[in-house]
Image 1 (cartoon, rainbow, N blue to C red):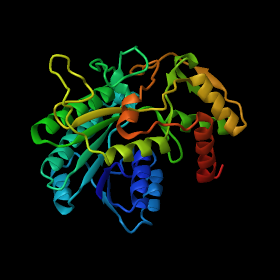
Image 2 (image 1 turned 180 degrees about the vertical axis):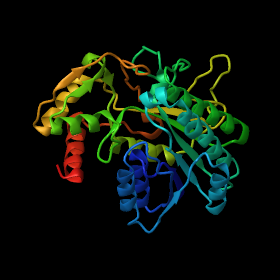
Image 3 (image 1 turned 60 degrees about the horizontal axis):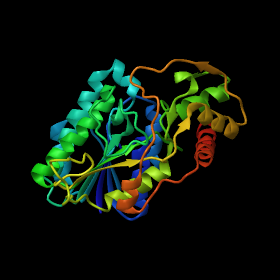
Image 4 (image 1 turned 45 degrees about the vertical axis):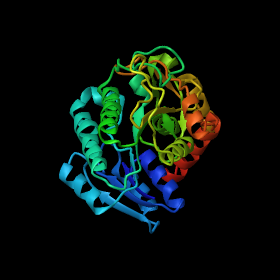
Length: 336
């Protein structure tokens, strides 16, 4: 396997690169190392990947179409795992232009690279649970309509699914979108809840608890995400012969296109999540209760039956185990 992983210096990208490198694949990692959060954390992840002889890194901005095209000409990729994106629901409220450049323009150039890649077997790309938007029927199913996003971040991820389907249909590119549900774990992003909460609790500072603690999330441990990504990557999307235009199924197509949820299939309140962090730290949080923020949804909960049927895998890591692993990494990495 010759795998391109975009967003290789990112949280999920780093772990995915390491998984495939350990499995003997040749991996090219792409990242623009932007300053959305601490660049030194991104560099630390890359430093670990640099120990693998089969890893090649390219610092590159996805919105640079000429550079992306040259990369696809330089390497003959068999698999592309597209994880690079401008992340963050709340950031998309204040900096919408970042999402157009990275998530829309950048993904277009990846699709064009795949279109002209003779050896490509499968494109796997990151979508998000945020695409479910105003949906309230739980658990969220890939068979549900998702036409009502409430943030530009969510709209950009839904757009990625539509763009990938179009290229799959027109050019026969096997493409699979993965809707990730609140990923957490070691080497996570500093803007994520578990990172912010852990840091502030250790420092004795109050934490902001949105929706007055009644927010619910399907927290999914990073190892489960990576296992799901890897299994899906190795099983290219295929056309659904039973798909009907009279009753169109959003999760599949007569083209080689699929969409799956990857979540823990367990919705947890923010209060319970914080209590789990407190237990792992042996410290109590001081809480600042706030209302629901613009762009946020009150609850996420993943139906993962399609993922299990496709690759025989269900995320299974217990929240207490995953949180303890994160806290252990956090203390070691920051020497706290």
